[in-house]
Length: 359
Length: 219
View 1 (spheres, rainbow over the protein chains, first blue to last red):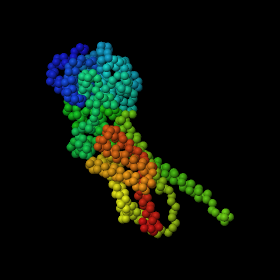
View 2: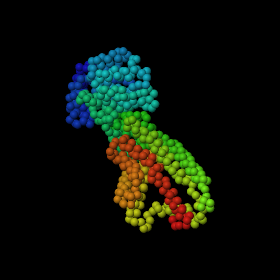
View 3: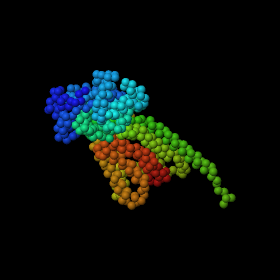
View 4: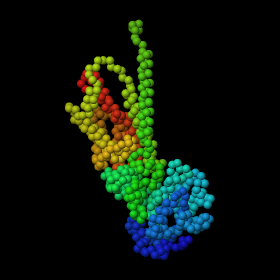
């Protein structure tokens, strides 16, 4: 571990020019919606920044978040920045295994106590400790032990941020998010299934620059990336406003690139930067590829009805319930009418005619 | 429960409940009226019932000669409201998405701009009718809380719908929840308030005409 080394020294070693580095800082400042002047401040802060120790914990996850971070961007400047942190523990990426790996984690924790960052991907099962363990230590204990000396926790991916797919009904393992378990540490949620790599590096750059986490929304996500909906920034938005919708995936509307709302796009209710930052080095994003947004950066997206049901349509069967209600309504009406008629009949029978004697 | 779960609830079980109350209430009220069991009129009929009944439905739906200016105002603004409401309800593409899942068929939507105009006219008509209710002494005297309640319950889905469509106020997700909840409140209230006239209006008009026809009175 080379934690004495600053980012500036490391970048120089790697042959990254100051121009390229400043371009990165400007892009980061713009991505995080910071004033243009802050790019220089970011550059100065990053150059002097010591490589923070990062411990990456993987729990109930599919490794998609790591795939997103490492594969899609390599070898761009973002991935270099990823190299610039001291990644001291990461199941998928580390060479060590078993007790050697755990020893690396413990050393990193001891040497950087109070300063290291913990990145978590995957949800944590609390139903039974046996559902997930590292070296005989349950996921819950592993998380709680590791975050003790952490400066902050970054929950990467919807599973770590909100419980994600393991948390979907019926949630057999009792999967929960990091924020459900840890209450005494700053937590930043970088949701998405997987999240956009630039968002992860953007948050790290922000932390290295300002020494604190960026402004978060009510779900703990950085506002600079999750402040707007996909719908707000979608290039197909004009078609929505004009009422031009694709009705199937191969009709004229789909071929013309019209709005995918009627095919179940969840863009209007999904906060993420896909429509602006895009994926695969800015190549495209799901809507650009012709498929609606699944809403993967929102909590409970897996339980929000079919991916192909429009947002304005019901998620449950209404027709059957309405038919049942009609039968019950008819039954009640017939029963009450029968009771009314019986009452009328009884009144008629009880009626006594007035006779001369009465007079 | 977070916002996403709240949206799932109002789109799912919430809507199921509101639809069940609406259908149960309407079927019960209509059938109960039909099964009331009116006494057979033993008098000699002096005319038919169907013709005069249908004529009354027609006559009460059009501008009659001799109406006061106030009468004309009510009829015209009433028409603007009812047609505007139906156009907004039945021809906005997002509403057709909802109805298609219930009815298994659909129809072409109108352009959103046209729907917005219809909705604004409807809202304008509702406000005009409310002002009239407040300012006209007779109208004010015969109005009770239910008139204002039904006005509010009808007005809210229109208002929140326009806000949702135009991006005014809350975010899309929150506004969609509010809009669906206002619709559900309206559905629940319809069978048990004056709004039940959406089913009883024409049968009541027919009945009035039919009575006149039976008695040989011009309907």
